Length: 168
Image (cartoon, rainbow, N blue to C red; front, side, top):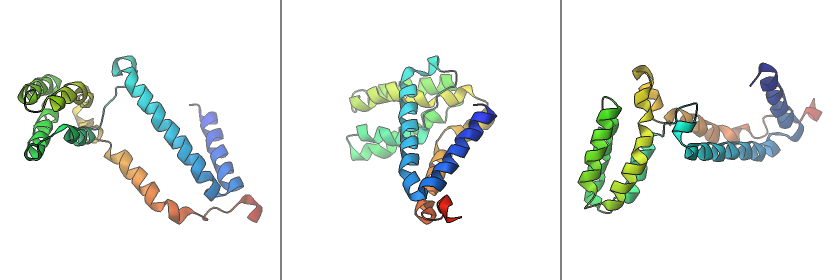
């Protein structure tokens, strides 16, 4: 995006905030964010090999999603631990070996989990192709979630903070 286009986008958003007031702008902003999220989900399904930017799914959320496929309560902590071992591998080859062991371990007792893991856990392996210094921050989406949480937490405080331009 060029600097001029970026500036125009910011100006449009500022005009929207002042012209309609923040209260009327919030639904529009939420709609923009939701459309962006839907677009990202569509891009994810294209496949990482077709994207110019590598796709890394949040390893924490992959672990959390795996719990939906664990049918025995006593296995939940073990599954979490086993997935953590996969993601803590030294490199992608070791992670794939550990995933293969995971699938073999659970294929009989938890077949849906094994199938799900084989199809979905590799989405968290992209981080192995990136410089090790970046791995800790890229493994999860916590930074993005923190920003979204702060916006959500502070949004009610902002209501009415931006008066319409007619008040000036």
